[in-house]
Amino acid sequence: MSPRRRASAEKTRPSAFWPAAALVVPAVGWFARIEISGGEHLPQEGAYVLAPNHYSEFDPLIIAVATWRLGRAPRFMAKESLFRVPVLGSLLRATGMIPVARASTASAAKQTIEQAQQLAHDGRGVIVYPEGSLTRDPEMWPMRGKSGAVRLALAGGLPVIPVATWGVQQILPRYGKLRVFPPRRRVKVLLGPPVDLDAFRSAVGTAHLAAATDAVMADISALLSTLRGEPAPAQRWDPSAHGQKETGRLES
Image 1 (cartoon, rainbow, N blue to C red):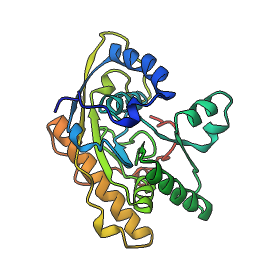
Image 2: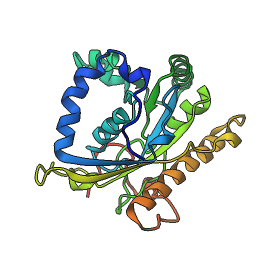
Image 3: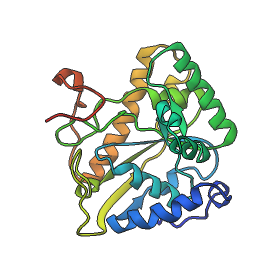
Image 4: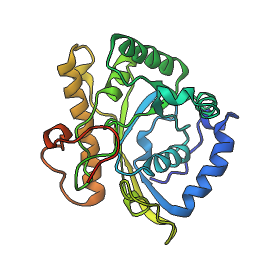
């Protein structure tokens, strides 16, 4: 499907996104020729959670531009500490980014519910990387996910839209150096239909969150398999089983 769609009211309203888009979209366009498929799955109105795979420090820019081209403002979940950084914190708040607490505490759970309720009330979408950091999988398949995306979705009754990208590693390899030439490398973006989470909406406990997260990761992996033209691994990479930290840089 062509990404040239009727812009939503969210995108046509004047906002802090416009000057940012005027800078970011052409800059990203130098590096990447973004080809979007499945754009009809991104709601043009109402709240949602967009869940991408993550294998390059550059892929958030690809997701942001693709989301903008599809008519929605690209808002991300960002570490709470970033909101306390001068200037950056003001920019994050002005563009409606969502602060997220790292700790798994009762206050963090309460914050998730409040964020979900506010998103639903405002009809805004948010981009959440369910892996939490760049994948540790040696072949860059999605690794085991974290529950943040489904917590937010289940708390607010929001749809989770899975999305996969491929080709960004040719621009910026995982923990590598940015490649300026050649410009306009082909990057594919594929969105899928909302993940079926009906079985988990009335359940409680960590087990159902883990199962819901696995359902999201399975759909993302299936989309990536389509882009790569090869089957995804039967079992997702578990960093703890390989003695790896799940946050921070991946040490070789």
